Image 1 (tube, rainbow, N blue to C red):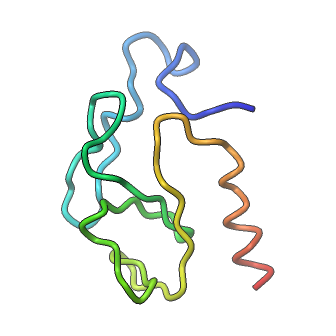
Image 2: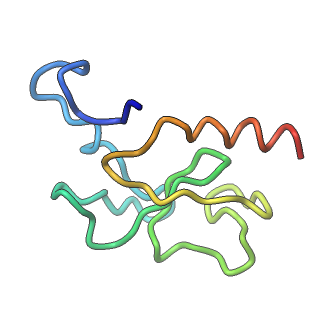
Length: 90
């Protein structure tokens, strides 16, 4: 299983996570090993911080309804492509 990381495939000194932020408030993903505020990846492709989770399961960025969320962590399994499969089957 592979993971998204700032490893050698991206070149020395490059850290993908430096560019990750909430699409609503632009809060950056923590530069430490674990963010202090949880971040989420939406099935519509947005990243939101815990402060912008909507109780009605809609995306805080685009308004998509009944979305699924995956907690965003430095070691995210690449099986998140299942979002697109689920979206088109539903």
